[in-house]
Length: 464
Image (tube, rainbow, N blue to C red; front, side, top):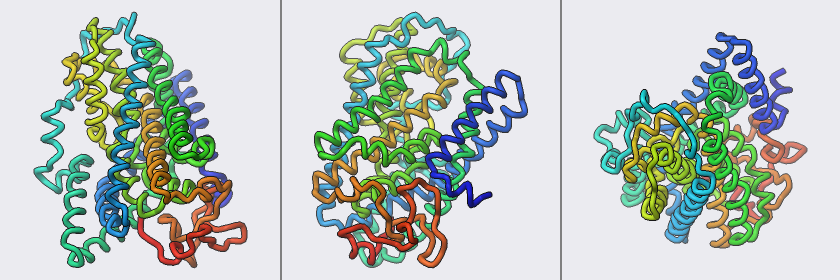
């Protein structure tokens, strides 16, 4: 039975989980099955908790190892600069899309929601709080509270220090590489539970919210989904066609499993190993560069949560409260979105980024409470847009540096070498199956086949 299930492509498993969740949620809502609603909620909650459990060691070790791996890349400085440049450029495009949709749709116009009982959120994202919150006062507390921004700061500082002291840090770096591999393996087991987690998360959302809550916020919700989908299926593919000269359709097809997982998990960091595996093994991005770009993007590049969402939400809240925004306000929205995207920190939700935007604009923080109830539903598509951008930028940068393996990118079903896959078992052990047809280890007769033109890389191997 288990073998039969694991042979089903991973993307199909996610779709099945999505369908089961929707049906179970509808049944729980219409037949008032409280036990089913509770079961769905607990199932989804446990899945998210498992993801969060692995986040601190995953983020820390991934960033430390990624910084160390740049020592072996001749053009590391240029790669980092171009990555940052594309992150900023795509964030600016995303926030422009969000502002445009907000101005065209007027999401808060005519909305009559009671704000008498709403309160400002406890977690406020003011600039002083944001900046002072970057530096931890207690290292252990940062990990216990899963403060990703502080963990990122620590990892960057320690990674740079390890590179500076050279050979004396080799033992420390090797330990981090081993811990990263262990963490990724554990996370992969959690990822395999995604269909069950998807059923719980989606089912609970349907059972708890239904259409009753979405109806007064229909234009706002549609705007968030439209803007995010526009990024995923139009903006990023167009950039790939214009600046990388590669097929947008191939990108969307090969990244589909990772995008599905992002939609269900609502976590960029939780999706990071699958996204990193995708850009290396399916899109042809060099492993050494991907080991930097993927963790860095998962913690700082949030076009859905930090650009599309706060732009439309700020316009919505301003219109609900009858506040007129001027050109300087829209410029401030763009500035905050481009500069402050690290505030979302790769976890679920974008409330910190929204409160940061509202504080900068001087808009009522009580307006956040109007959107809290539907935030999980909005977060699904926001996270999907985040991850799509996190996978598109490495392709753009790698192509500009002439290091993108175009043959791998366009291969319909490229076989993978075991050493390129951090989630593979040992060479003599069993290989994970059912992660999608193009993500199966080895060719049809079970022989591990290195990528064409990369035989040396396949024999040497690198930790990601």
